[in-house]
Image (cartoon, rainbow, N blue to C red; front, side):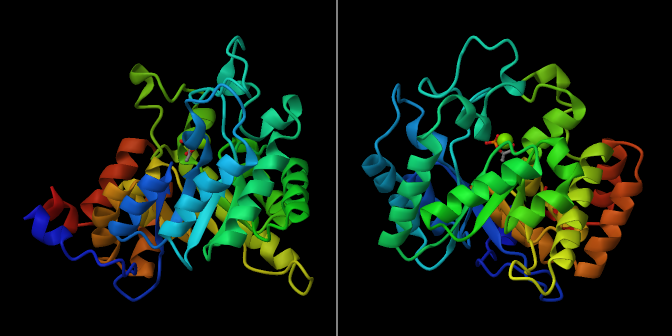
Length: 329
Ligand code: PEP
Ligand code: MG
């Protein structure tokens, strides 16, 4: 039965051949983080900080922010927690940062771009994240949402460094960032693919509109190509920097809904994605399916998915090669 198949989840996140793929959780609050830790998440791959303050009309104080982030760090002592700076705008308006009258909010002043209109908020948030890190043992990584250019990535990295934060990264969720990943990744230590927005922007289809759901599908060939470009760009950036002070592998994770689809998770790993972050309830199924394939099989399935002419063909081709999915129902 599904229950007995899934009961095996132990937080030991590896493929059939032992290849490790850390499975992390997407959380919005300290309470979410406690649940994610109980569910066996190895860490947090996306702390959506705007969720801590959605009910607020004004900017939270640095002290309030330290308390909110610290509650998440406390749930994962010694573990990785990837904090995303405020991603206000479009589907997540925050009255103190975004303008509800913009004609095209998804293309507007949102995410990292709010620094253009509300200078200082980002610096204060980074100060709070650094202070919360100092008070807890978590391994804190920080990333900016809606990065479009290498210049933005460089500026974000310098703000992180000024705040004493050592591991700056970017979300890759705008197609321009995926297309220029080799230069974007020279500026930061890691990237996390936000496949929800990456799909919306690649397909020019509002992610909130039900009638466009078949376009808003991360199995779309265009989206899989952008994932591959990002991973390959990150590898190229790592090579260019070899021998310099900034040399290091630049890991690319996924924190969009795509990571929660067990068959697509296999494809993402096969494309070279290093970590997967998802809502806690998806962890068991993804872990169970990953444990049935070797990295070589995952790579072959990624090649097959990339070669498919449509989202549905890619999905069917991969699912047909994963018999465990029948058992999971
Ligand atoms: C994404 O865009 O895939 C993502 C993880 O961020 P959000 O859903 O919060 O926009
Ligand atoms: Mg997003």
